[in-house]
Length: 152
Image (cartoon, rainbow, N blue to C red; front, side, top):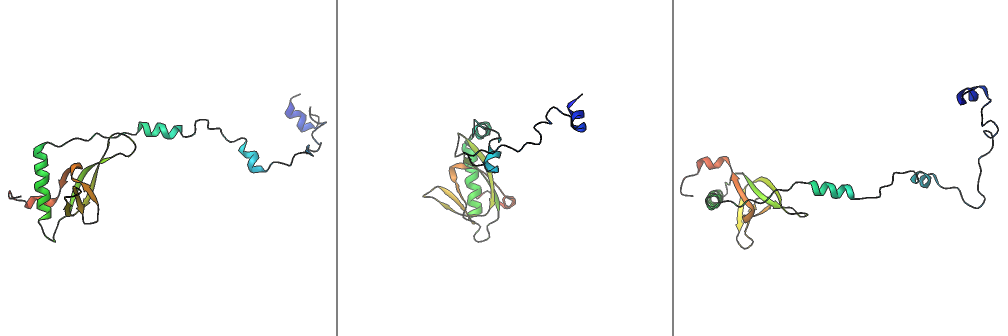
């Protein structure tokens, strides 16, 4: 006879103990359910290891230094945007941003209008207050450059 059949018939191997009361210790208080559940929680012996693996596998880009003619073109475009007076068009400023945790970084693009160049800090300041280091600036793109003449 199987155990299931014994339970159905009421003649199983544990019939003698099935109705007995659960043992309660007189020395120790009953453990709260939250602590009891914590006993069966998965154990993470290497806590934080997954974060380290993700950080190690995260890709960063290397900084590429523009050639001299590229620097001249950036300077020309920047002067064109800044010399427009109050009517400064918006442009996409692409620059390299250092990664704070590992070597390298990423290339970002910020859309805005150029406000001024801070020569002391060597930064381009956009109208919204964003500061882009001039040495990190890679390209400037704008529809307004179609109006640009050779004087700039």
